[in-house]
Image (cartoon, rainbow, N blue to C red; front, side):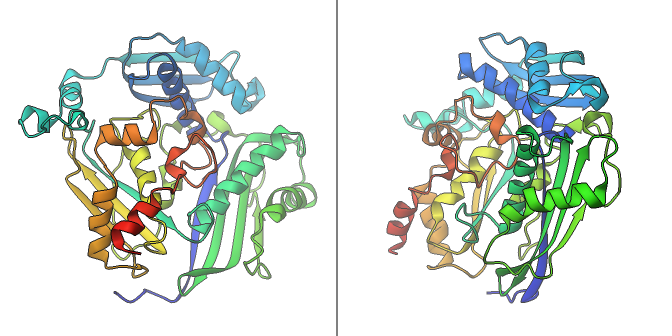
Length: 401
């Protein structure tokens, strides 16, 4: 095992509310996806969204047998998020909507319809070999034992703070808040375990005339932060920052252009420190349910609970090929069995062919919009089938644990 860089370090993660323009784009893309899957579960969707002041642009490639009134769907999604007033920079009742959608390229579709294994005559009679991956790429999943949801504590807490920030606005606890907001959490680790909460940063959009020091800061501390502070962490030195840049009245697409998947760095594996630094190039997960595997594969490693305290899985695909070209398992020296045996067991227990993942996780359902904010993983929801760790027993049995 390679030595740790430091036995004590501070790690920071961030999240955003559903009213952030990038997350608005994600939710619009996934709303289109959900609507298509509702009537045609075999729809193929690559839907991108861009938002700016008073305007939503939806573009991409879609192959489906159904019809969806996309402008109407876009407007309703914007309203649901909370943008129903021109003073916010965009109003779902009046905003412009431009739609530019084409069918999926037949050059891509041929590899999804009939995988390389079938075309090469090596697929046999197994129908799970028939569907190829819709793109090449490396997918990463990460799980650990820091929280009951098997997530790193900083990103888990950042998501929960963002979620609560939106909740206190929606229920009227803090009625002067507006939809846009961001959270950031810094946690100190010692010997690989979280021990102290160092900094919590919340930047939130608000009505004009709000005093930041006498109203916003204590309200956020009492209603958002304190109810979520983990009891096991030292918070004696906690520093709370609320809108440190000052007034935050202009928000949403009026202040920042929103783009599908622009906030993918908020996912746990995009920035979590590993022994090997990596620069990843990955496309959007929103609006891409099945052939583009980034979301479903990210949850597959969660079935490995008990084999290690921390685990990162890399799965790489070639476009048009059913079986992954590589599967890499990294346990950071926390494994309870031989690392080579764990990698072998993962390959035996989990079928990572696209068609198998769709089958095992029941992915042809309209469940994706609610994954578009507050994290794809680490959330207790019956629709998030990738959160189920029942397969852990199969993995332990394969490892003799």
